[in-house]
Amino acid sequence: MRLQNPGYYLKLWAIVLGVSLISASCGNLNVSTESIEPAETSVSEQRFDGVTLTVTGLKYPIGNAYEAHAKSFEAMTGAKVVFEMVEFGDVYDSIAADYTSGDNRYDVIVYTPLWLPDMVQANYLADLTARVEADKSLEWDDIVPFFQKYGGTYDNKVYGIPADGDYYMLYYRSDLIEQAGLEPPSTWDEYLTIAERFHGQDLNGDDIPDYGSCLPKQPNHVGWWAFWSIAGSFLQSQGTSQGGFFDAETMQPLTNNAAFATALDVYKATGNYGPPDELTHSMSDAREQFISGRCALTMDHGNMGTLTIAPESQVEDKVGTAILPGATNVLDRKTGELVACDKFTCPYSINNVNHAPYAALIGWTAGVNAASDPKTQDAAYAFISYVSQPTQANVDVTVGETGFNPYRISQLTDIDTWVQAGMSPAAANKYLGGIGASLNNPNIMLDLTIPNNDGYQQEILGSALSSFLAGEISRDQTMDIITTGWETLTDDMGRDQQKVIYRTGLGLAP
Image (tube, rainbow, N blue to C red):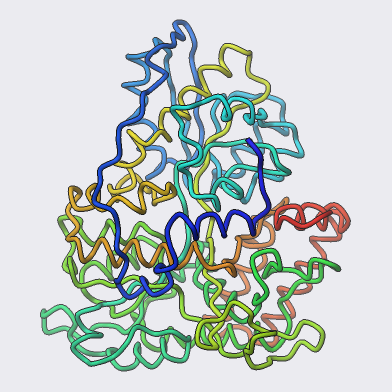
């Protein structure tokens, strides 16, 4: 198995899915109706009697999906699988405590690639490259190349098997947009205009005024994903390998310039058209508001697509999906000012709009503890492969309760599975088209993947954003706090080390 550079993967997937994906964000994707042939589950030929696997990761919803498959795995192999799953805010600390203490109590680690550099540096994860190469049932080549490269691979070695792909997209009430004779927003100015247009109207027929935009903004509850979804289009314009968080040459944070300031303004302005208590809303709150029909616009992972067909949804067949809106002006990193998009400043722009779809979290991946004994490692690999194999995975991604979003080519090209799950063909086309337009964009922005990710994102940036939205600090104070905090943390972690790891994650030479 030869691991290629990011540009190769993007070009390869463009060939697989076809050039129609960019326009498909408005629902024009033509997908195959041929069903996927079930893969042979090789675990049925393996026995692990007497082996107990201890699994850690996110308790809900990701852990539920792994637990659901554990029973059949146990029946086939004789292994026993026990789970020690924790809440989202505790996952990183729980994993870090296991390798820093040397306890090594976990055999299977379900993690996000944001933490992969930390675990690789600690020699915590087993190198799975040879196993993946020999595992025909896994159908590795069916995994979207972007997730092959970034979902569990570091420095050309595979340390994890993806079970989920995460990327923020725009979701909009297609019925409202169409009735008003509008188009989905392609820029952030248009997003705010449309949000204002529908804010205060009754959008679900219950005689109660509703909202133009609904986003999660609860303090330290991944509200920064919505912020980076906005900021990325102003900060990154030269392709994925440019990165949107730091200058890859100096490791100076891109958090104190005209582009970052503009993104803060847009982020705060969305609150003018949201629920009055939006600053307390978690992701679950924002999702509930949208599927109950109370919001015209939102941004979310792929989960929203399956939630719109859940029994409690009030917006079935009323939702469109598209690539995140973009910017017509982008950051000049030499001057710190904004410059207009053209073929040089925004080589991947669409109609002079720079889109930077944000791979928020990147997805959930499962790895194997390198300190587990050989037989346990065999069982651990067999289990995580089993969960990710198409027979299981291509159904899992259609069920909102799993938390898994599409990450395989077959999941994006076979409409039958989605129709069987309850989507109309039209809704499936819109949903898959939005995903394709996002993942196929050469300027897709990776989430931050360097050691102490939580320190940068949650403790420093997340806290500053919350104070800014609450009106406790000004825009300039917000940028100063984030920049000073990130610079100090980078120095504390070791600037040279952080630079090498940041560049490696972007596919650049150290």
